[in-house]
Length: 135
Image (tube, rainbow, N blue to C red; front, side, top):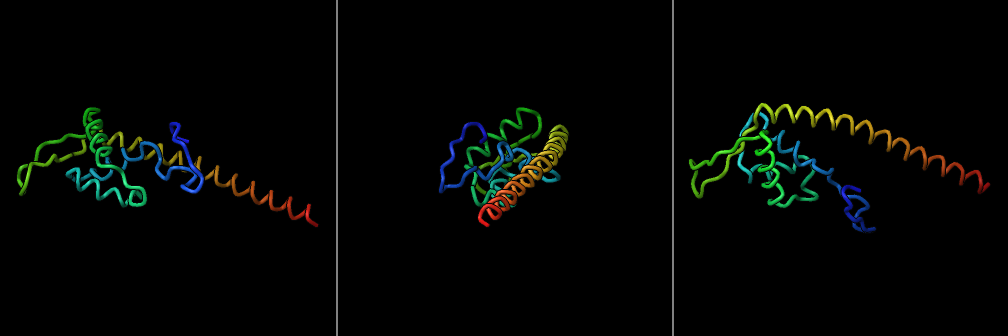
């Protein structure tokens, strides 16, 4: 379980989100186009966050941290109606970090596929043993 999050039977055995997965999702959303935080919140749904929405404070905190790390730039956009909004842009360093994330996710997919293969094999062998014992 990631970072000691308690799990409860009946509410799902594991959290559906991968720890820190928000970071590469935001970087990818900003690749090639700048955006406001509110738009980014809505666009996160395409990565599966619709089932378990992320609190806006978590997104804005992640954006600030990524800006402090040099992966994003922001500026106040006063061109539209209403109050000024912060507009985020991906930096070259942010694009490099996005590539690193993609490589890490590829490696995680391989590891998760191995786990699922072993998991399936374990239950096939258990059912096989149960069938043979019952005869």
